[in-house]
Image (tube, rainbow, N blue to C red; front, side, top):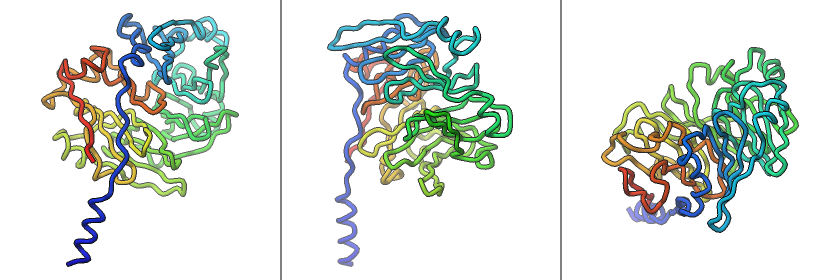
Length: 329
């Protein structure tokens, strides 16, 4: 009995570093242009700089330094047409990632992976549709979720053959998950943790999985565990990303909420960060054009203001039916 009590005491003493907080009101101003114009298709925020694609055109760079907001064109639609070898519009459906001093993304019109230097705007094709198709042995399609990989390249779902691939900045392709594992799945949301393990949401199995560096695969969060928290069936996972201190965040579409867990003990730490009041989807993260996805952002330790489509200040977060909840140690 004493041994059991000792174990319980040790278990109770386990704690986790606190999850990251939402960004400050001043930082969120960098992304305010989307709400003001209604023309933004996708964007990425890195620190206090936003890179915004307007109406499938070029990319505008919006900087907010000490409360002063300025904007400049990173590259135009003409620049994109010249780099891509045609007049097709830039179609960064899943937004952009940040790799060093470069934006990196999958373009769903060209089915290729691209980078753009955030200082010069120079556009580079990392890997082409032809190269991807040759690698997977089929017709390439890059209209799936992606995340920046530990090697600085991109891990993405190739939806033509339903293979999860990684491409480094030199254009070398490797297979992360073969088509056999995901052939009947709808994959949405990809990220890596600090240990180099890749996570993804399977919206067919309603489960979040992760693959360790040794190749082993395990279920991390199941639909039943989400149901116990939200009372919503058929959990739908989107836009998963790893924050600091071992915390993972994801958008759960059935409940229209952002959930969080610590990678050291996912089940015990699963909790709600931002929810729609009353468990109803009358107002929330999807209310402003359906593009308020976490994957549309790059991170420097904060969740950013994506969780507040309107109004655009953290100070008004409690209005409009949204509630902020934090995991308590």
